Length: 317
Length: 317
Image (cartoon, rainbow over all chains, first blue to last red; front, side, top):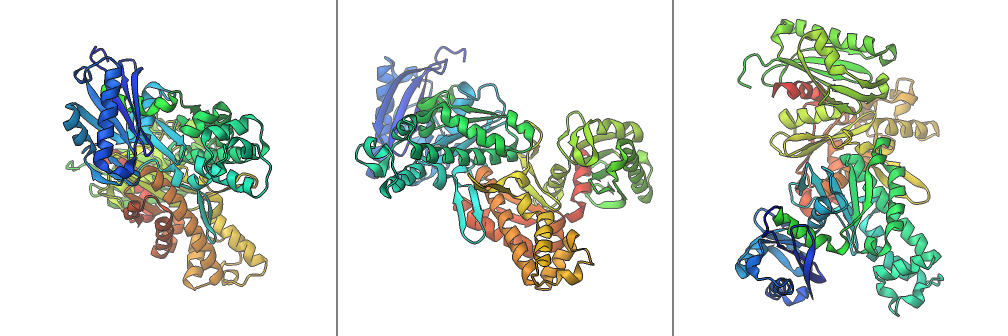
């Protein structure tokens, strides 16, 4: 990164919002843009908004598009990084969509794309909490739960380009009664649904007051607030979720013998270190063999910026 | 493998027995040797038996030691393939044992060692059921349950050299009651213990007749025989074990997006295709996303020879 012209655009294309950032040679975000995705309006509307938010970030940085070296984009669903196509993004109604080419044509810059969770993991690996490790896994807990792998210094996407679906691993199997996955037990949505159900069935909780009237859609910040207020119901539900996340991460590390796990995403960012500590406790109690307890379980240091910084780092390195 | 002198020795050093084979250019086993390990007698006795069985196999092949190109050994426990040392093998009472150097000094040949499960996986990958795939996992079910990974055409051992401990992944977690691992639910030992317990508590089963008086130590062949005799108790227990193995394999493939899974080991070899079919059924019901159902779940084709052929292929390639 000795090149002075190494400013890159990092774009985090999510189901709810699109974020763009101009990222400089030191992985600093020098300007930002943000719009709602509104996937329901169709692919050309979404592409239009990606271009709009990219231009807006460059303008705010006081730059011209020609000052930008290249563009990295993290997109949901399996992404074929080799062809620049989004294989499938149900949130956006996309199937085999040529995202990289479309944005390249519009902005006149080289575009590289990858899966959003891979991109967040790449950011944490290159410039965040996993810096200095050869291998790592990034586990992101929010609406869903996804993971990304770096193996031997490279993103590992797997044969079908779907690697990292930790949210869909089974943590509780029963040959007769079926199973529970990590995502339907410990995601922000699962936690919120369980808390709402318990509150409605008469359990006492501060959530009925602080959830702003909408107990059916409790957000990460509200969960974190109730936890910080020592609400027993919230503490019980959140700690159980952390336990299951720790068990699932222990499974990954028991299988892959990794030296570092970065935990991030909306719920983790909102909850902070206390949540990561609880995950680490469950991890240590379940990983095998015992020397794997020296695997580092660390909270994301890039937080909500992991997506844009990671995307920029796809092309700036 | 155009070299005419590509005969190699493959040695499978297990907790119970040591097997050696002279393996030719086409991965055919042209001669064999086999002795009991008797780890309790100490490391120099075990090393002596490794050398003895190696010499015996070479002699039976009508060769001299100078006709052998090199020696590959699969050993239990974490193995440092770079230094040729066995990190830890509780069965043998070994800790940081310089196995490669010791055998090299004795036989005057180059020796490469690796973990026994990795070696079995390597055999299936190079010359067995996973031939032609870039990535695969080998899952071996016997006394315990272990796995080995090939990623991008190379064995993946992980940072702590312990990758593949699928037997110690949790398949049934409960925040209050603890957990069950795959190994303590579905290994041959777990199956045998459960069947013995059920038989002793009065459940009707042919095992009481065919277990040769020792219901406490039912072997893979006996389980397979009772299954083939349509013993309802055995069928129920074995199919449940296959279900849990399928769930654990689905977790691995959901995480790593692999195109091929080879299932082998003592129990699988004894049970045959019907067991692999049951595992495949559970796999398909639990893997995510659905395109991963095209991952091939195949039975080992090398069977009990996977260890010696894989070990030879460590050095013959």
